[in-house]
Length: 286
Image (cartoon, rainbow, N blue to C red):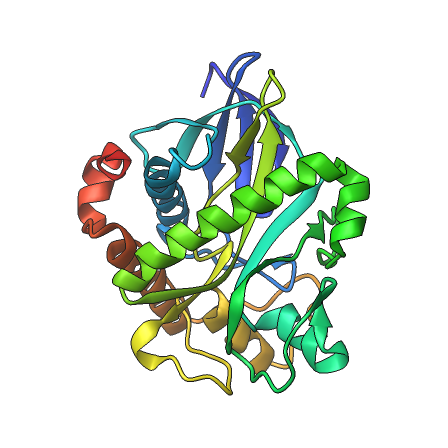
């Protein structure tokens, strides 16, 4: 990549500067769990993340602008507009799961939202809620209240972010239900362009940033089957691993099953066969 300058690494992505206005976001096949990148990769995982993000960016661009400019022929590299990213994770929850469920069982609320009594794990919430979190450079992101988020980005900007995140979630969740997938919750990242306008960045509505449940197996009152990293998390927990670096190697059957789950989510949501995407990544752009 002679024209690009490497400017950063995340758990999953490598970031390159193409020029003063454009970045190249390259999704690897690395997988992390409990904030530790595991030593075993999941083949084609990066292509699923890039292709699915590209699909959603195209589908939802009338609701909110996004940073995507193009997907390159390798299927895992996305050219993007450079943004000034906001310092919060923008989580929208439509169902009670994960840290939201843990907060609810302890306090009856989550991120400052008082919820009805008697909810069960995985119950659908009366309406989607915005539950911001900090962006942790190490360790876990921490759930924060709306007031705390407003201190970080300003009240007016937060109202804009909250409205955009909930609307994007509503439209995406409705689309996914038609494909037999429940989006229980998802995490967005927003930034500002050079004019100060709000833009959706990073990735969008992937198995890494969302909780995807198969609709035909949904049953409140328990944890759900999923198309996301939960399969890998469950395996790692079964090993007795202490959740510190380095993580456990994944056996071949876990790798194959995880790859299959990611690809099934891609194919259900886009209605595009994954081999067709590998042959021509722009097929997801509508």
